[in-house]
Amino acid sequence: MTIRTHPRILMTGAAGGLGQAMRSRLAANCEVLRLSDVSPMADAQAGEEVVQADLSDMPAVQKMVDGCQAIVHFGGISVEQPWAPILQANIIGAYNLYEAARVHGVQRVIFASSNHVMGFYRQNEVVDALSPPRPDGLYGLSKAFGEDLSRLYFDRYGIETACVRIGSSFPEPRDRRMLATWLSYDDLHRLITACLTTPVLGHSIIYGTSDNSVGWYDNHLAKHIGFRPQDSSDVFREAIYAKTSAPDLDDPAVQFQGGGFVKIGPL
Image 1 (cartoon, rainbow, N blue to C red):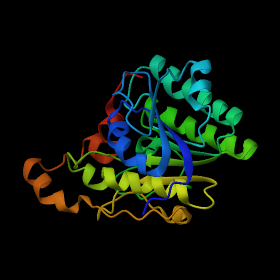
Image 2: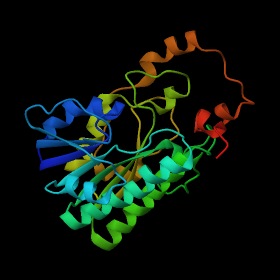
Image 3: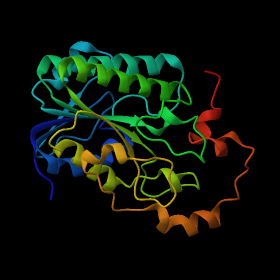
Image 4: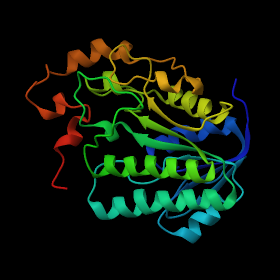
């Protein structure tokens, strides 16, 4: 059962892949779902509001946040890119969002961080919320900044944030690496719902993966959130092995948790 704890929730990045997947699901979490993106979106349906806004535009972000009680922040650059667009969307954009949350009294944010904050840990290591960040590129670095920014706004202003280090959220895993990082869309919604409804969220880091047998992430420090994944990449394992070759253990994309992101460059 999904409890509607917030009358109006803002979801940024609504035109992106995860935003589109969560649009119908998050409607159950609120009376009104406000959808925002810099790109065009489908027209508003019943119980929706659509606001086109650039995260780097502070006045637009202030208007976008006004009247919302919680934010699910998928907006910004979601892949490795040159510094300039990442700076605008993921650094300046994150600051603008939290400033707007402070001004308008928003008390809870679900921040879509990434496994790429930890990308230079090896695939034979297990990390938890206290493991120091090791970003695998500018994108991962920008998400580490967002996590630190959210902690500042919690410590100084009391804005609770769940930093969700999303693994690989697709309809099904695409390769052997994703057998460890896969997060189903339904489990992503379960995770967001848990973050919205837990009585005391504080500032929390939680790894976003389904109940996969192989994994690199330990969520024991996020038990208070109450997330229990119900899906697993295991059902895809045989098919993934059949269509992919054995890994080259000398390849950095196989050695490190960030996969191919550790080889993208130059910075």
